[in-house]
Length: 85
Image (cartoon, rainbow, N blue to C red):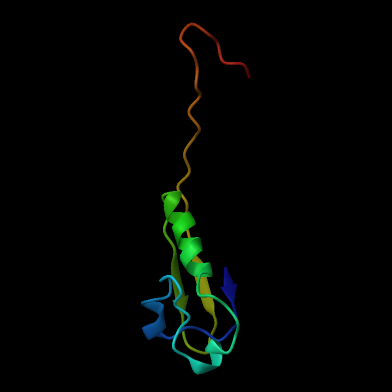
């Protein structure tokens, strides 16, 4: 996901996914929020064995990426039965 917003300074990127962290820019702090969105997103992605990161420059917008591993579902079957298609 990418945006063309404020961008995120290198200093703030180090803490971006911490719970309740909203950055250090006074202009951004005037925008309402709890600082939980990226924390919750990271938690959900990690629970699915993925990872998330951000690429950004102050004033240039941001790009967030998160690959999730794909695994074929394992068919559960009882011994002696044939799975139904």
